[in-house]
Amino acid sequence: MAATKGKLIYKVYRALSYGLSPLLYLHLRWRVLRGLEHPSRWPERLGRPSHARPPGPLLWFHAVSLGEGLATIPVIKQCIQRRPDLIVLMTTTTYSAFQVVKNCLPTGVIYQFAPLDTAASIDTFIEYWKPKVIILMESELWPNLILGASQRGIDMALLNARMSATSFKHWSIPVFLPLISFMLSKFSLILPLSNLQAIRFQLLQASPLVISFAGDLKFAVENVGMSEKEIKKVEDLRAQLAYRQAWMASSIHKGEEEVILQVHRMLLEAHPNLVTVIVPRHPQHGKEIALKEGQNVALRSRGENITSGTNIYIVDTLGELRYLYGITSIAVVGGSFLPGLAGHNVSEAAAAGCAVLTGPYVGHFSSMVAKMQQFNPMSVLQVHGKVDLGGAIKNLLKDDKVLEAHRMAAKQAQQALASGIIVGTWNSLNSKVLRSAFG
Image (cartoon, rainbow, N blue to C red; front, side):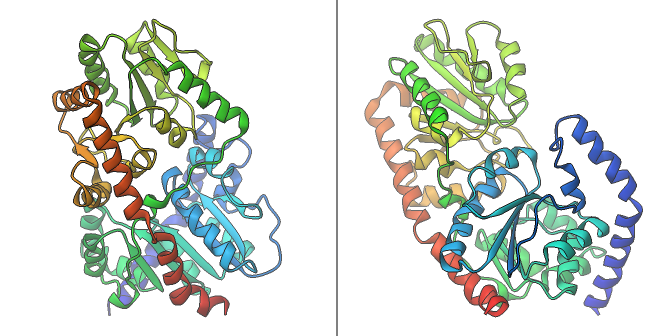
């Protein structure tokens, strides 16, 4: 009965996606004009390929944005190592992910932008690439993609599976529950981020038989490959900061700069030689932050150096964050200081040996923060606003022993939690999906 209702709701969704296709096409072109889509490769979003499909069995990995894309790469490397006979296709949705991920993929992996979830785009994409298995990351639950693939006998897995409280609430509404239940029934494997996420998927009627655990892949994200020129730029920045105290605020969303700038001014009173490094989540936000602060600001995109008068350095570039964590001993991970935000990957800063702080709004990263704090309470400091944040950083800046203890706690927690995640994920994938699909 539930499957019948799910099929009916899907037919309505599919019809709507056909009807709305012209509007979605116009929206896509508008995004191209705004620089939010690739200027020449945007037709890939309609399922149109820009690369020839080689002969042979194909495995398709899909992640929406940069963080998920980087978390996928170690799994792709494991697949290539264990199954070199497979063709691997990687897709992401966002332009920012494309700019970084395309340079990090192993040789031979095909990269395309993901198709929109319209019936025509999905059908065109799947008919051309003909994947035998689709591996989705985190919360990419799109009806045309999942049910279109299932109709063609394609096996599917969902890695790092998560569903926000808001999404769970929406999918639980009686009118939508049959659809999500029908979609989840098509997965051969679901690897949730945590026990809470596993419970949410089961309440949405995912079969307990397909749910397993391997750990959070974001603990195991590798360093992004950089050219010698790019590495030299990072080393140059390290040299410029050599005789200055510094802290970093990373992945800062619009509005959060107010918190960071106020904390910066507070700290500057006690530490006049201090440099605050701000890495906005979206590079274009960097110039807005610079305008707010006015003097004593240097922008990385302009090639500006840190001079004796500089006390704010804005990294408005992409793909350098994991390396930049290595040049500062304190990292405040943003996307966490305003209601409605959902945090970012604190383990990247921990892996680099930073003392790690984050705000109260960490969303689906709450499981990561909790696991690290359970390993060692000093590994991640969760603060609640600018006064709390300023006080915590002041304590770290004034006592080298306390700072070193927090840095060591963060690094040890990350290393312990990352251990075995990739192998565990591969073993689940291979036994539940790949072996039956590819032999």
